[in-house]
Length: 149
Length: 289
Picture 1 (cartoon, rainbow over the protein chains, first blue to last red):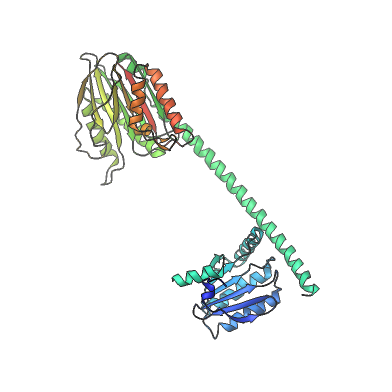
Picture 2: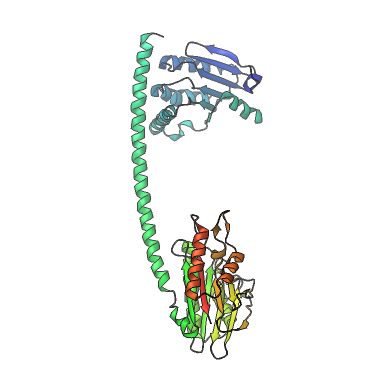
């Protein structure tokens, strides 16, 4: 195992099913949701993220990474729920720092851009007020950012 | 995963494709509209500059006036965007001739506004009083320019340049400089830089400009130029053309006629510039005695 910034910290698995894995590091107050399949059905998607909503009640999560590298289908209704419902509800619980890791395929990034555009058109730009979204290449990059703080 | 998973994924993919295609179409339309707007703006700006160029060019003096007093004379002005801050002024005063090359601060539209103002002020001065001292001309221009533009403590309108007065009565060329660039080419091929004040015009209303006298010999030439000529970037290592390179060029071709020298200087500039953009407004004037 290489000595990356991420594996210098213990990331405890707090959720795992056939669609995703969620890990958590208390020291960095960070949770990482890693998609393990090309597509997550909306009901499963909601179940995964509602788990985080519950977990944050008893743990400190100030940084949340959504690793979408495995995804190949961008599901607009899921993303709309994620943006318009889930993120604002987590903002109320103190989670405002979100990090996204996109698959290394240009068309997926364009689909995300189209989805975001549609959501902003529907809900307005201020839907994410107070929330910081940073696109990163890896979890290591986020850990490095947090170490420098 | 059962078949319903793949069915749902397929539907989601189709939905994603349709939404992305629609989004890209909207972006394409937006870009097309912005591009059309930019083209319109560019055309309007270009038309405006072309008309402004006609106005500025119409204010330039007729070189034939100089040829009444000197064996030959010619000038070239290459404004960076068609209009700019370099200008030439020539006025037959009756007893002699006054001529200047002025380089205003900045270039483009503000440069052109300043250079036109400078020309009009010079014309007003030389129409009101008979000028036979170029230092007085610069002093009056300096005062009027400062009074017109620099009403507060910030000085916005400056010129660099040299003013000359020549009368065939005594064969003396009088000049006064405000950071102006002037070379004298004598019959031995020597290139002599003429003295200059360190203050520019418009900087301080109390600046004193010095008058110099130069007895001129038949066959000698002078070159007045703005620093745009020597500051042009280019050449193999993208460096400035420099005063030294200009001196070498003049020394090599000192015996050429005014029109030949004008072309040699212009071609040297074009060759040096290559594919680079023109760095500044450029003007130069040649006179042969």
